[in-house]
Length: 157
Image 1 (cartoon, one colour):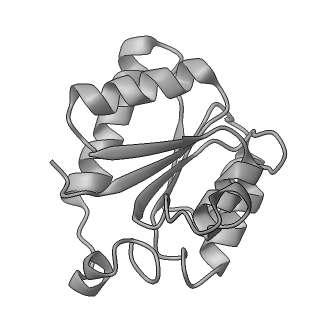
Image 2: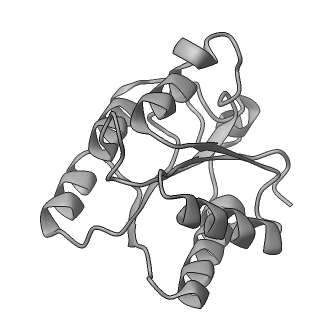
């Protein structure tokens, strides 16, 4: 288990949400996953504004799984805001998208994405990709002790 580590899944496709949640549950890779379904809600959650004002629901975010093609606010804009704000810049962001466009890949890395994964269309491959992402980012990847103590945001990740 991951000692309370949190994942923020930013995904508008209900089938992809369900497959991702199922893979994380099956392999016991996270204690809590917060799902948001559009870019506006993602930013509100990450920065405790709007419907998330004062809630602290995303305060312990340790990993962001980000789709690029989202309603309201595009995934690249979310990435840019996360990586430019001191409260969220150290949270690993993994783009998990169906976009194979080279332009999206280049823009994502220029904005500071930690990893870019194209979603496999096949169910077993998708599940395995999510499992591998979870194992790496939640269990194998090491972060400084002070980031863990701060609970994710505020310099953690």
